[in-house]
Length: 212
Image (cartoon, rainbow, N blue to C red):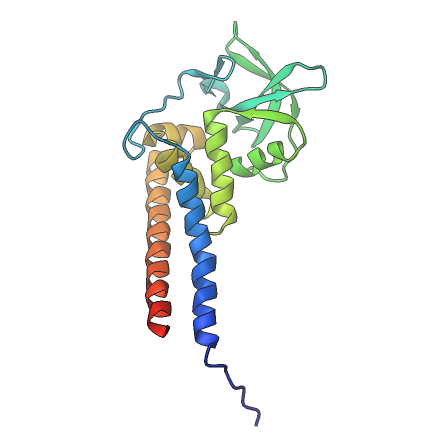
């Protein structure tokens, strides 16, 4: 019968590896938060989505359920506006008709996913020169949070909008086209996963310290 002998340092190395990997994910969240100095407390409402951003485009067009993602320089050295349209499940580029308060799509951004943060990533990776709106920046941060597997994609959306960028419960629900109760659930789960990860890293730090 074969017996596999473990080096005495194996548990220490394993603990260090797990701690470092998880620690990097927690640090990603902290780094993203540190880039945004919020003039309000804990996402209780300081941003409004009934205003305008960038070149005066509305952040949200209710009758189209269209969310402003940013502006894009097109081949004619002109700017197209980029909106995520919930009924289409994609980002479209086009023009905004102020007289009609209506977004007029001209082309779409191929993504292969209807998840908002995935479509923002597809826009940024498409090779165009894009300037993100505040909502677009929040969704871009959500990409990083979910890529590190610390948060699920839906949790990352809510956490980025509420906790990092300071949108209110109702605004976040409108942006994501979900119910306020769904926002509450996803935020609770995101906070729980974050706190559990931080607690686990602290525990591993203590274990490694005791081994030395």
